[in-house]
Image 1 (cartoon, rainbow, N blue to C red):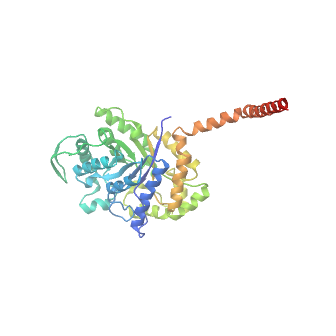
Image 2: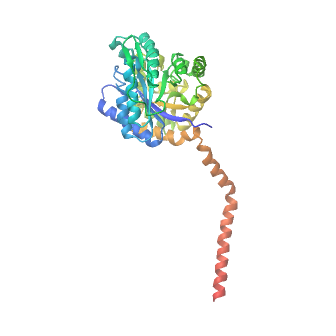
Image 3: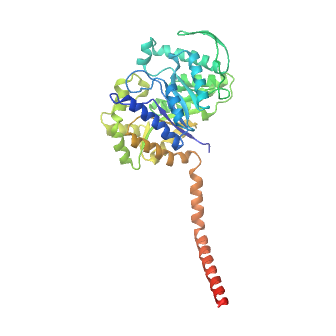
Length: 390
């Protein structure tokens, strides 16, 4: 079976009112922890308002995280390219591509919070229109083209990059999608990967998974591109696990209410519907029963990933949405348990050790007897040697 990659998608979500410096430090330490555990990827968000998602520049965060890590790939999850000059977006990513020796990825989206875009005079319709236009410019620049084009917000005149990317031909690019076909359509058009952020958060998003990839394939055919590789498709989902289900439930009492209230009452982002439960146990039940996540044990996590594999028809990476439901220690333990007990099931590593154990168990009686026979043989040989020398 093909190796499923695992990673994290960090908006991040921090309860307002706490020390932001320490919260950002925790985010960096978490990425270091993921690198040590063998996670493949970490994607970092861009937000500018609403008080919880406090990383304004994923590129700056990635530059810091890259110096603390060895092998984990780092992506912008996502750069809100509708807010920026597309020339500078491409230029910054090429710089990071060199600084990280090819470990950087560009995730693109329109920007999720209307309170962000409103501050620069854009509405959600504007940002989606700019996303399509700016992504086309960025892809052309990354291919080494010179671009002259006026957009609603910027004017490019013979614009081109002064550095070639470190990665050949350029860093990986992925487009975000929640429920609509907009992201999959652009991914297919440009040969980019797909970040299904709403993979489990809404019922419509979950049901749309297979359709999303159909759109990617159809658009690729329309533009004469090769069939897209499902390895470039990443699904984002929710999990928290502990040694027992009861412990996991206790863990998430720490921060689940803030996370729910953020989407229920603060963030004007209805695509990320999380239900209207008023108490923590109801929130836990909603996450588990609606199928949008897994709060429980590693067995629950494995079952959730398997459901996504079957629902989607196959994908390349599962990204855990960072949420701070639990305190930092329990959160790190959850990531550790997933790496230890869930990764092997989807990376072809579990069966070989189990099979080796079973083979050894089946042959144990014969081998144990041969060991006893060897001891008996050597004992008799020693007795013969002793008797002959006396």
